[in-house]
Image 1 (cartoon, rainbow, N blue to C red):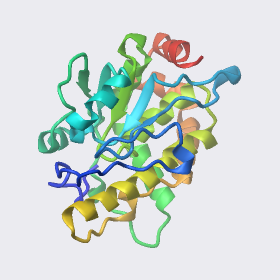
Image 2 (image 1 turned 180 degrees about the vertical axis):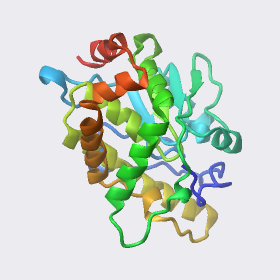
Image 3 (image 1 turned 90 degrees about the vertical axis):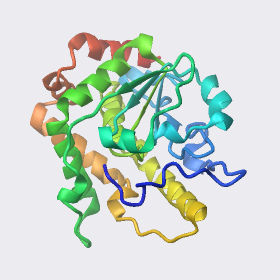
Amino acid sequence: MTVPLFAGRWGVAPPAGTVSGVDAPEVNRHIPFSATFNFRDVGGYTGHAGRTVRSGRLYRSDSLHRLGETDRAAFSALGVRTVIDLRRPYEVERDGRVPDWDGLTWRHIHPEHAEWDEKPHQPGTDLARYLADRYADLAQTGTAGLAEAVGLIADSTSAPVVVHCVAGKDRTGIVCALTLAVLGVADDVIAEDYALSSVASRRFHDWVVASTQSGVDVPPPFLASPPDAMRLFLAELRRGHGSVEGYLRHAGVTDAQLAGLRDHLLA
């Protein structure tokens, strides 16, 4: 998505000593870096037959182009092999990509979708409904990209994987939600994981204000992740395709890839 606040400001160096904080719901999940605010482990949730989603295999994040040398040791310690970058081509060109560190494969996958300003949120209307509709649009027009991303996550040789977009809540949120649903994680839990991005968005917003010493006015859809938006999206996706697996098969994910997700991401 395109966010006026972020244009031209993603490359701002963080103030000396700045490290993003860890909030109570994110203990042992959120991983702080100097200027990346939504990096967290997707593992630890309960899936099919009581099996646990493995930690240290799949991470989600906001844009990684702000990772610097001060973050290199901590990032390398995670053992990440593959970065799935879901941003639009012009967002990559504008802001840059993850550093070209040894052993790291960068995969740019762009799920086609309309710019949000083509259908702006109207103040006073249901924000969760608005976001769910934008996610439904993404699922309809971005099938090839979403299938490619999920298929790459399903390949155990790519792991550990980190998937990111700009804010790490919308495109990234959909890819992670589809993955967790295939693993048998309950919708309410998926929605709670998605909602953690609201805290990260506020953290990033505060950092931008502190870094630029200027006020910013950001539309609510770009900062908020109401859990009902994800619940609505998943429920309506199932109504349209019978199941999340049914949608992914429609998008191009194979049965072998769906089995691969469960095999290497469930303990």
